[in-house]
Image (cartoon, rainbow, N blue to C red):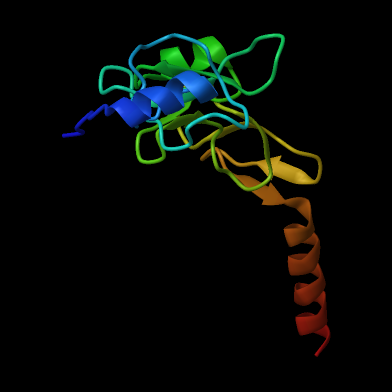
Length: 142
């Protein structure tokens, strides 16, 4: 459990710098601008444990959202993976992937240039097949 202790000095720092010194964000769904005065130790509450970038006119605005694919996709469809370990909504981590599946899994929907989409949602470099063919030809010759 996280303890929130607020001293008189902490209150003065909050007022002077305009940010919370506590490590816990109080509310879900409120836009939190990320700038040089942001407390980097802030964490979202248990009811909405993930940071997600809010699509606004300004970059680096975040909200605390619940741990669900729908909540992550609602703010940014390109970040559908709710990652509780990192505490963020993120894109899938698939080598060569351009567009993730929208179901929140580590599967790719569209691979980048030079990659082929495999049935298991991973991407394979087209160069792999070129090298395999070249090695097969060399092995056949020798």
